[in-house]
Length: 337
Ligand code: EPU
Image (cartoon, rainbow, N blue to C red; front, side):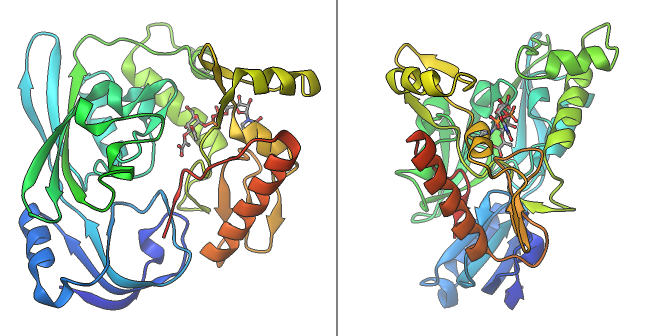
């Protein structure tokens, strides 16, 4: 059941060929508990993985990797307007989105085709095209790694922010998410104002708006910009979009009049990191087996055979040049292991 010295290449979307000393897959909370109670591995460092779509393996891992494969999608409750759906942490995120779209449960369609699993999604409050998981979140169950008890986290317990949650901060390494429950609407509320959705729907010739069409538009946009990890190793956006003081933005605007921005509040604006990286000259940059995607500068890629160390070094060079040109510090969205 526990394998030894295996390659993690199939288990991370960057396709990095780091090894792990121990590896196990768990299909249920009970299997997870059994492994955690195994005296041979009590003191061994552990890494819990979904699809490995948000990690950068910078070296071989000397501990136990546990792939969370807990499946299952079920209706928990419903009334005339809403439906409550619970999904196992190991369900593929996009499969859950397709289940909801096919059943006309609205709320997740803008989050189509995001790589990763259901259990990983709340960790960084995944988001795209104007929707974040927090908008449809009901609660989650997580295994407390100290007590091995299942605990329930409601929306306010999770402290969701932009690509942030309590599980990346005070509860980092303390819980494993085992299932997530969502509240979806039977009456669709279309969110199409963000990015190219409206334009894409028009190009698709959609007359009667519906959630399937929005999902298809999002899939179309993502496929046109983002590399498919099955073809080119990557981890989606490598950095977060930085938030800077409005005063700093005003000064930058004098020098870079086309700088794009999204207001956060009266005193803060968000700048697309992809624009900063492109302006610093990195878009399409390639150094041997790694590089910066030619259609989305926020995505670092492994063309095959690159290492996590090389990608880390490239990310640091990008950070330094963006800092030098704009005085803005980029922080990674991807987790380094
Ligand atoms: N831009 C450039 N050059 C580039 C890329 C982007 O100038 O090479 C500028 C353009 O002005 C563009 C703007 O950046 O209009 C925004 O680009 P895009 O719509 O591609 O979105 P993003 O801000 O780069 C964020 C999320 C994505 C999410 C999209 C759509 C983050 C870190 N990333 O990217 O999420 O899919 O918005 O909502 O917030 C992910 O987290 O892995 C991810 C892919």
